[in-house]
Length: 96
Image 1 (cartoon, helix red, strand yellow):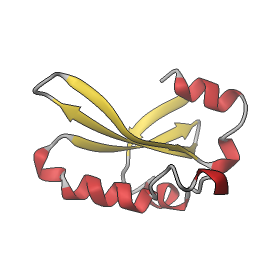
Image 2 (cartoon, rainbow, N blue to C red):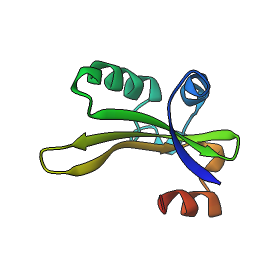
Image 3 (cartoon, rainbow, N blue to C red):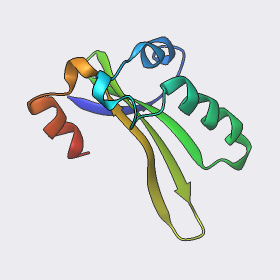
């Protein structure tokens, strides 16, 4: 089962350890940067970091921004680890 869960003590290190394929590095901010951004904007209460779980394993990361003024969610950052980039897993993740 695929699930988005808030980054917490149980997933923090796994999120930091995720890497993307070399050819994708120019398109994806490092997760440490995304977690720092979430911390920076924490007092606004509108930026939320999520670990993407496949069963018991963290396979990706999403940073979601909520704009209550216009009632929209924005997928600010999204990454899937290079080891899970191909195949049915990615197709399933995009359905989220």
